[in-house]
Each structure stands twice: as C-alpha cells, then as structure tokens.
Image (cartoon, rainbow, N blue to C red; front, side, top):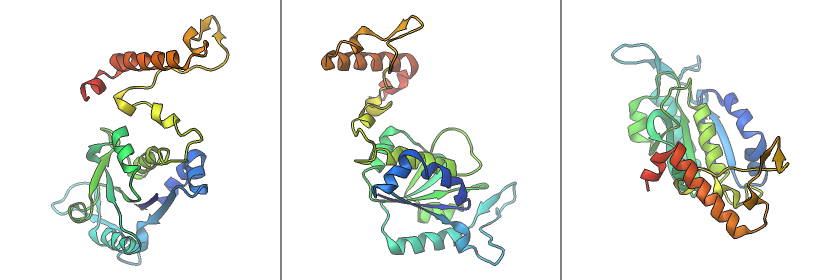
Length: 226
C-alpha cells in the first residue's frame, strides 16, 4: 500500500511513522508513506499557501492553487483510490472504515490547517472526508497519523501474529475482552481459571461472553448498530 500525505508541517509526522509497527511495515516493504510539504507548491517566494477568507472573519484558509497543483502533480505518478481530507466535519473514523481502506492500494491524505481548505478543493478533488472525533485539533497531521496507523496495522504481514487484529476492539462491533499475563495471582487477584485450563474452545467462549458483557456495559450503542 502507498499513502501520500500533503501537509504544511511534515516534521510532525516523523515520529509516528519512524517507530514501532509503522516503521517495521515500511521496512518490510508492505507500506510506503510519503509526506509532501505543501509549501513546495506555494504561490510566491514567501512560501504562501494560505490567505484571508472572503466575507471576513478570524482565521486563514488554505488556498486552492497550492493544493490543486500538489494533487495534480501527485496524480501524475499514481492513481488514488481515495483522496481523503482530515476535517472535524467529516464522517467519524471507525474500525469498519479502517478495514475498508486497508484493502486499497493508493491513498492521498490532505491535512487541513488554520480554518481549513478552500471549499473548491473539497468539491473538485476530495473523495472522502474523515473526522477522528468531535473536537478540533491545530491541524490534520495527528489525525492523519491515527488513520495511517489504524490502516497500516491491518495489512497482511505487518503484525507478527496476523490473527491479533481480528480480536481488536470494534471488530464485529464488540469491545475486546479482558486480557491477563503473569503472575496468575497478583495481590490476591487471580486470573480466571478458564484461561489456565488449556481448553481453546472454552477460552474462545469465555472471551466472546466477556466481549459482549463489556460492550453492553461500556458501549451499548455498538450493539445497536448491528
């Protein structure tokens, strides 16, 4: 999979993609992540990529020309399955969306800044708009990092145990069950016996029951979505 990211602050994305699972995914050749500094396509020598909004009001807006030129140039090299804009008013990102996007080959992410991007870029180029929650960030870079991480870990071969992702929270609209490791007895709080008896069928049944219970208690809305 190839993921390109347009941003005015590429340095914000260096950490998330240069460590842990995302780093290994790239080293294995399973995922390519490229950040592109929007100022490369700035309209003047002052590296301008934003301007005041028509009609007045506080906050700057990312201009059409730099974004359009960046997208056009990147599209000459590859065809994107989705051009995604990270924005608070997009569709809320969830595990289902991550699963679907993990099946794509080429994605382009646009990180907003200031008051956002000119609406004409959204209408002429963007095919999908994603929000990571009902709050506002300083820019779309952190949101992009979250989306890339959620997608990247689902790619075959990225995780050492490929079955691990199948039991994550939100797969099948259920939260993950409780997990335990050594010691079996911690200050009098013992691991459930079923996990120590070595019966895979009973363990699977227990985990499913616990997932249902935890979901009913903490996120009953997930069960209503089925």
